[in-house]
Image (cartoon, rainbow, N blue to C red; front, side, top):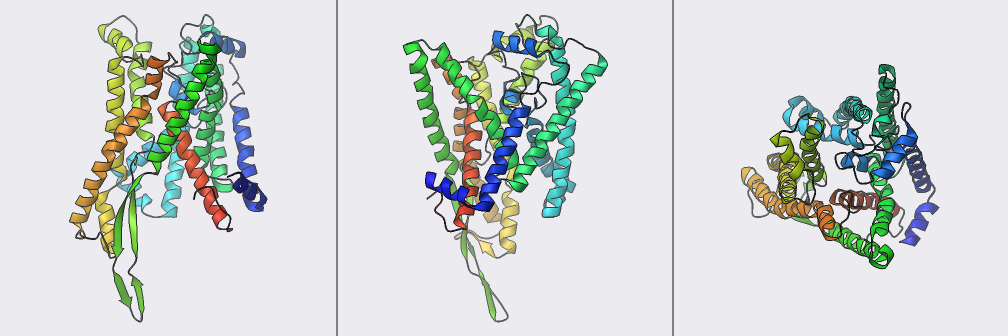
Length: 437
């Protein structure tokens, strides 16, 4: 593997891409430490020291921003608005015929959908930036901190608008950096930035577990978490690489004196067809009741029930609801992203068929049956991986921001595998031995 890295850096064009990607990553990490104007940086750091585990409601956004959210920097929202916009456009493609037609137009249609995604990203950045500034002004960003209400000393309208504009501009810069990596670097730029954001918070979270530990000055807990992480990475790699291959045979066609077709291939159906999207959906949906309860006045019964059952990660109601939502969204996302009827029609159009299955409706029914069977174990696997922080919370008393949670592991492994495959393919074009054998 190290020899392959050496070969990668010896190749001039590949070396340029790697160095360019590393340079963009450095710029991104610098931006996550530059506070926006109008924020008392000392008060923010004091609150972070007083309430290190109070990020429950904002943990998901803070995770995708590499810890920049709670420090209220120019990259506070990170890549999350773009991820949200991409998911919304992907879901709307199934509902709106115009977007579905654009998707079928090839590269020109994809470019138009990407443009719509950028516009929606800016709108979401304005909305989420306004919510972040309003939360920081009210002191609710750090509950339990004595100086939380002094994070934004000047609460004039001009200062508030300036803060929102800075956060929105920072999101646009992050989006631009990601597209630069995609065009001139290695891998998918948005995925690389998301990978860096999550990986950057891991060392501090690991060291916090070591300092909180009691066995051998915390080294026993530290080593145990490392072993658990390695086991989880191995499990995720194994499942993410697992796929059901549906054999497809294309009949031979003769046009004039030339014969076409007659080849054999397969349709790869991954065990985890939905990826990390169901976990993000479920986490976001579970944050909404807690957020509504936090900003509501009074002491009503529904607010007390939400506070007791849906804000504590180790509560049985929270665990059952979270697991059920992950399984549901896994089936929902697979159903809207993989259309067996469309795949069957395309196969029939080009003379393809599954051996033993008639073309047309029987092929679509067969693909739907296979997809439903492999989605069940995939969704249960996602639900169990998503509950890793909860298990750690109960077993070793870790915080809810456990460094090797389900979302973190899935994203790190998925992006890492995809990036390695891209480097592998470029090395194989130059007859070098790659990472994967």
